[in-house]
Image (cartoon, rainbow, N blue to C red; front, top):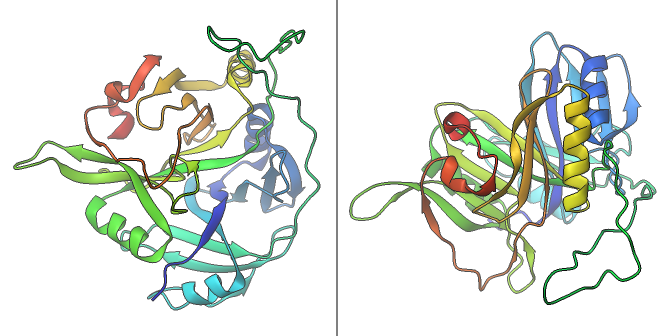
Length: 313
C-alpha cells in the first residue's frame, strides 16, 4: 500500500476543564480565537489555517490527538484502508473538511484531514534580519520590538511520548510519507539502540524543516510538547518577557537545541501541558546524514537554559 502523502501539520487537540483559562493562556501565547462554543475552542495563527489548536471541554485535562493535512482526498481514501482506520467523516470545526482517524500500535491518535476552507491571513511585521560579522542586510532599519503576545505563524512540530519506540517508528514510517532526520539512542552493543527519531516530511531533493514530529520512547504515552513557530529571535524574547509578566509557568528556555538547531522557549499551560515557541530551525533535504544521538536532556541544549533531567523521561 502506498504511503500517505502529507502536506503539513494541521492542528493539535487537547481536553481541558476550563475553556476560559486555556483561552487566556493561549491568547498570551500568541494564538487568536476563531470560534468558540460551550464545548470547544478553536484557536488560529496568522496563516490561512482555520485553527492550529483545538481545546475540548472535559472534566479531565489530557492530550487527545494531532492532525496532518494530506495532499489530496485520494490520500484520505488510502488512509481509510490502514488497519483500524475510521471511514472518511466530516469535520465539525470551522471551514469544514474531511477526516480519517488512525491509531498507532501504542494508541497514538493521528487525524488526517483535507478540504478545510482557508482564511485570509492576518498581518504581521516583517522579520528583523541580523547584522552579523560578514553580512549586514538590515540597513536604515532600526529594530523595534516590545514584549507582547507575539503572533504564532504555524504549528511546526509535535513530540510524542511512546512506550515502544521501535514499533511506533516502524508504523509511522510505513504509513506516512515521513523520513528520519536524526535518531535518539541509548547505549548498546555492538551499536546504540534506536528508541526514537526526529521525522520530517519526505520531499526528496526539496528542502524542508528538520522535523515535524518526534517519536521518543518513554514511561509515558501522549504528547511531550506542541511547538509553534514565531517570526524571529526578537519574537521569541518578546513572547518570553510577556508570558513571564503574566505569571505563566516557564519550563525551559530560552536556548538553542543540538538536534534541529532551533531556538526554543518552553512553557507549561495551566493544565500542565508543555508548549513551545521556536525559530531558526535547520532546513534539510535527502542529502542530510542522520546522527545517532546518545545523551540526556542537558546534552540536547547548546546554550541557554537547559531542560531539567526529567524532560525526556
